[in-house]
Image 1: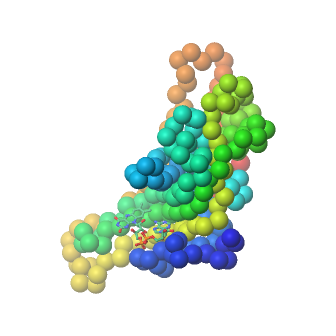
Image 2: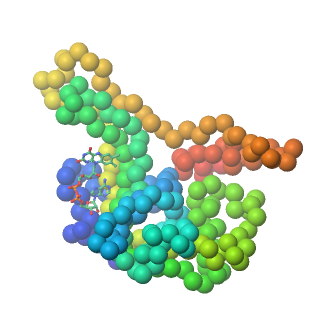
Image 3: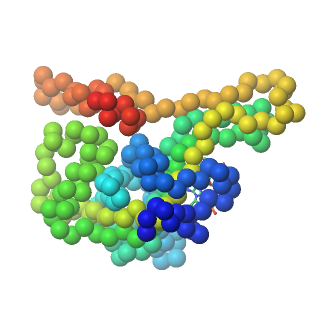
Length: 225
Ligand SMILES: Cc1cc2nc3c(=O)[nH]c(=O)nc-3n(C[C@H](O)[C@H](O)[C@H](O)COP(=O)(O)OP(=O)(O)OC[C@H]3O[C@@H](n4cnc5c(N)ncnc54)[C@H](O)[C@@H]3O)c2cc1C
């Protein structure tokens, strides 16, 4: 399914439909800025929505976890999943409670995930996942051994049926509320890393690498190095 056929009847944003976006560029930008998703699936008639991390490579989303987890045990059977990613950009404080809102960029992906069995592909998917979350870290870490690889399940979710929704901009208040005497505006909520905290048992003389000191989720800043 190409992005030209988006939205499908299942992924068409209904409310505030002008905020629906269906192009891959927007989708990828949101997916690359985030690395936490919520995976929704039904097991034994009960819906579960599990937060977890992900990585993207092209039109594929990788999700990994313990081979023993309920999520992974169910998803590897090819059950339908709904994966959402949310970037919260700010609180929009209107004069009226009704018109309060949030600035955000979010994605919904529908599909079926498949287990990656091939050990080489599994390792490459793990690398993609690691590089998605903190570029540069993979090469600096001890690689997974056979036992660790066995204990890890990686799922591949083709990104075929999706939607994005974006709300950006100022307060939208009703004209009759404009003179209401309260502060109105946007409170931005950017993701700002704190100062790195060295491990208590860190060997002496090891400084935090650049990819830790300069960590950002802002993909345009990241590509500038
Ligand atoms: C941070 C944040 C806060 C929000 N707060 C509220 C709130 O308080 N109240 C509220 O009603 N809504 C809120 N929303 C919007 C909410 O996510 C839905 O868009 C909303 O419930 C309308 O859904 P719908 O009925 O149009 O679509 P539905 O019928 O529920 O969904 C139809 C299809 O539209 C697409 N879609 C719907 N919403 C999104 C989305 N957010 N991102 C990507 N694709 C989407 C999906 O593909 C879905 O399958 C919030 C969203 C975010 C990200």
